[in-house]
Length: 97
Image (cartoon, rainbow, N blue to C red; front, side, top):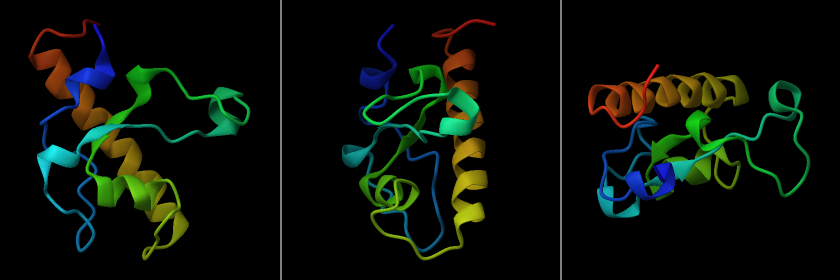
């Protein structure tokens, strides 16, 4: 299963109020590369199972290209989006526990 391809045309799960463009045509699988949690380096991504579906505007926000909210809000919003993304994939039988 290619979780990156699964993101195409999906709703944005990050959905930051005032930032989200709500355009499923721009949704991709977004990663928050937390070095402390995953022990990764520059140019490396966390496993796709820890990704969240995000529109281009929300992706820019969580990646730091555009920020309006304090840092901690982005992290919490992103991790909640990972769980929402995983729930949809579980409900569809595309990932299993």
